[in-house]
Length: 330
Image (cartoon, rainbow, N blue to C red):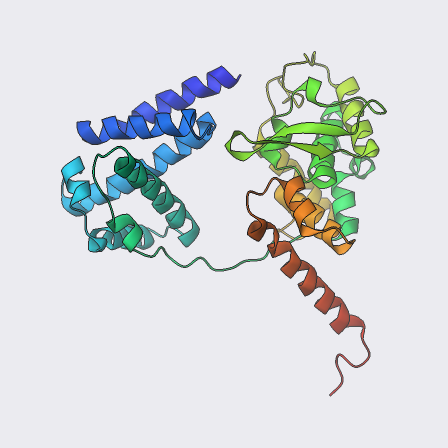
């Protein structure tokens, strides 16, 4: 499957670069190759980088009136970069997305400088759009357990193995803090049988791997799904299967959570990713330290993990205001 993903990504990259000027396209190909060989970025990550830079170049082309060449990039001024950002803002693109495609363009610019192909200082001279700070919205422990508990699905009209599958995926998200892509990327051989192991090797963002502990009850939930699944789960095949036997789509899991959300009366913020937020927040609330939680989540930077400390403080203050007799005193 990995080779197929790589081939698809290469085709997508070629398509994205087809509209670039020949000299820029050649430089982009070299940059993407460096991302793959030296930085070991996954094929899908490289494709995302290529898409973001292609977007930047496309907006810049509209600003300049022609596809930018290497000479145009070398002569680019901060006002040109600001014009690109302003154009994206006018299209209703949110600040976080703008920062992402600007970061990809800067990475390409650094590659040009390393290779002696030109300097693109304008990209770093312009401050990116300010991203509003938003806190994750975890579920309560009771709601997180309800979403990931197989018993909650009793009475659902869908096939029992599909209900078992959905419960197994969500149990991994909450029990081990996995991203949905990480859970759906697991192969059958990655998951030990109950009593024969308590860790799994997870392939995270950027091709990075980490060991993650798995609770016995989560292993039992996954094993119950595997035994009920009507398809042959080969050791090197996808663990979680769709109704027709192919790899399970993230959208199917999202829809399953939407159904559960309505049945349990949960807010719209109850999503598969909210279970990962809940994992981190509940661990912190029970005395887990940030550095350990960072490793469990696979965050590259501790600053990313520190946001859960703010969530925990916010929850504590809400409990204090609701419970302390002097909290509402006039």
